[in-house]
Image 1: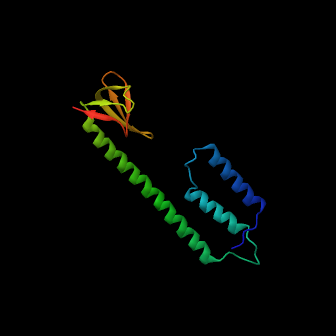
Image 2: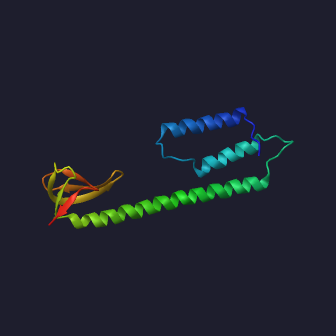
Image 3: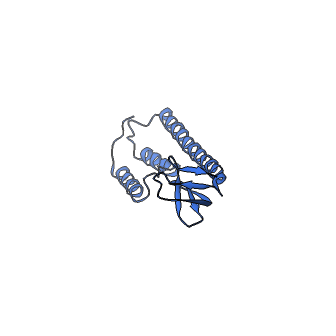
Length: 137
């Protein structure tokens, strides 16, 4: 399908681009924005060369598949974080040392964030639980 740029489509694309750049880099085109773009594309199409309906259905199916994959990935990430927190909770009451050996102490609590699992020690220090961290009784 050949797409001819028009003022309305260009403005819609510019608006979408500025919204994406102003928000986080992980934000993706949402279903509503996709439908708005598709309707705009259909509205300004060349009447002598209309869009192929098969291609439109194909685009919708592809977008739906990608959207479902993104949702599945988010769910799996949530499950993984929950599993990491469950495993890290077994460190509570045990002595841990950071990979460089500069921080050590008894684990009072554990928490997860976007950067991973963190242990808070009884002395108030925190250690990111990852490779190189030593755990002992």
